[in-house]
Image (cartoon, rainbow, N blue to C red; front, side, top):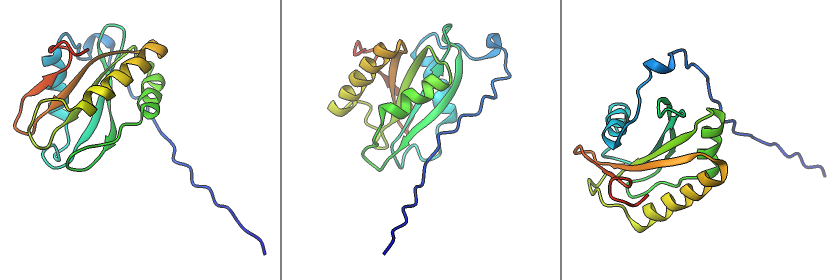
Length: 152
């Protein structure tokens, strides 16, 4: 009797299409700037399922891109730090802004949100990739900024 093992590998593919000069890319100066960019490009499912998205920034806090990290259910999503930092490293990001939505509209961070933010900050410190903020977006509009509230 013989056995055959088939391996399926998932590949993370990043396409470098940054043809826009740095001076023409949006610059993040505060949480409101980040919120505007995130809200403008958030999926139509902002009120249905929880998603985790990052903004990747260069040394001048100019946006290199945004990346969907995970899609979850109604009340949560799982974020794998290895995937998040792989994206940041491949894009040569100097810093990252974390974000996720709360389909319920509740803008207050949960204990899990705070723990994840702290865990990702520690990972960023090791890799010399600053985690500048973590925004929670609501389907009704508005946001919560960890940095603005002194939680960073």
